[in-house]
Length: 209
Image (tube, rainbow, N blue to C red; front, side, top):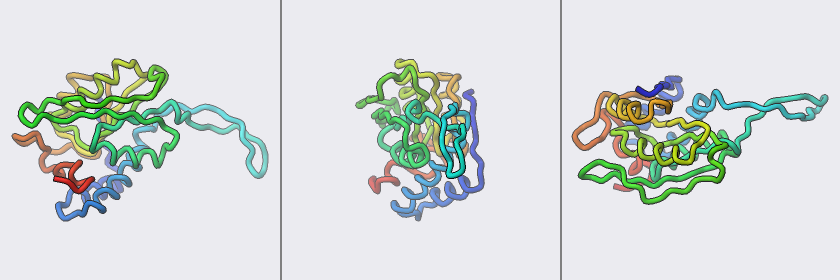
């Protein structure tokens, strides 16, 4: 199984509970997702390398530490990944952004790619792939596979929710990719949705059905 990091900070869990409620409005769901993603970004970027820079405070010159945000790439799995992406960019605004468009064939549940756009020089970059759900794992596995073709320095996967089936599928396909999540739910249903879950994240973010 993949290296799984459960982000159980009280604020993360509180906001996730509010998002799960079926009466949560589109506006509320979208706002909470951005806030939750920003909180998760702190854990996901915990091991980001630092470099020394010379600065001047109001008192004196000093050597201080900064990250090189330009070497970090957030890759959003369209369309639902956009909600997490926005929240993470609030924390690391200098990061580059890639997009991969995948849709799930309703009959086979297999991920079908329709769009792929990444920054240049991916071999010099650390990649964080974002998508609200790791359910069957098909979309996440396909996305990571495509990204690995560009040989980035590292790849992480971030989601709000997952389940044992999704973690097993991801771990079997990409055992080197750590998964960061706010919850590991009970199971998938026959249609590939997480239970108890929070419904279709894309529809809830954008107010569609």
